[in-house]
Length: 441
Image (tube, rainbow, N blue to C red; front, side):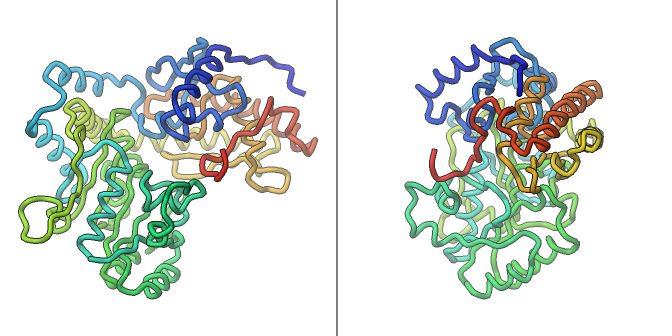
């Protein structure tokens, strides 16, 4: 039985205030307190580098910062200074600012596989724009998305395929079909079944597993042969896989791609990029029907574009992607060693590319378990580690990694006790954490 005391009274009170005012108590479902052990969902006061402080005064080593968006660490001086320079110059104008030109040039120099770019605020803005553009260019109604990737957009074409589909007409959802990652034969079968109907294939080019040899090139060939648009969602892979994203690393060029998250180091900026022939359909210099591609009031906000430029420059000049991989390698090795030493190496499992690590918590039968995840998260929090994933930022130091591994070892010792007891309940401290996508609250 757990006898250690760890309470977050101010965070708990703040969470109650949030729920009274904000549906779900957070502005992103993945940040909800249902994702954390009961009464142990810290509300953040501030952050610096790889550390955050909650309103109760506790300091944590933080992973997955800002849902993977803060990859350089909080309040990164180069980004902060770039933003500060723009704040006194105005944030938004009735005509394009010079910053828009500079940001587009910097982005396209960093991601040379793209020929044009348009900025927005959220990932959903640009993935939906990519889908609309693909439909307009091909004249086809259906969207084919990768079923093995958890999230593409808050818009109906995707959310209708999830368990949280309330409010979305079935007629909309019927136009979205799915294909499995890594299986070219199944994808070709899908394209033949809906011959001439599929506007685009949209997927994350890589996630927790590397693409099988020849897979992305095979998708490129399938898309070309069937006349559909190939879209890479690079929200996560952009910058973390290479400065030019997964397309730059694997050498397969999509027709369209979408970037965000790491691009702004926490500032609100996303990008739709791609081939000029397609992108121009959303512009003014063509003779076809106009496509309402992206038209956002705040997409050209000057300080967010300045942040993006600073992020891109920092990645290229300081070799940030390589550092993320080195830190991730060190962390993964330490966690695996600690788990094995405590006899839970088959139950606490680290997966993914070193720059984008996640962990699985498996039960006595080797099945994914929300109850064991609750036990694990609770012990991490008690040790000063806030880690819904093990996604690193470049602000982490070796001492942060070492501290994390020590706390993981302590958590794994409790994990072993729970496995031996055949029941983690005494160590949960309340209800288990819940999956984001579920039908009932």
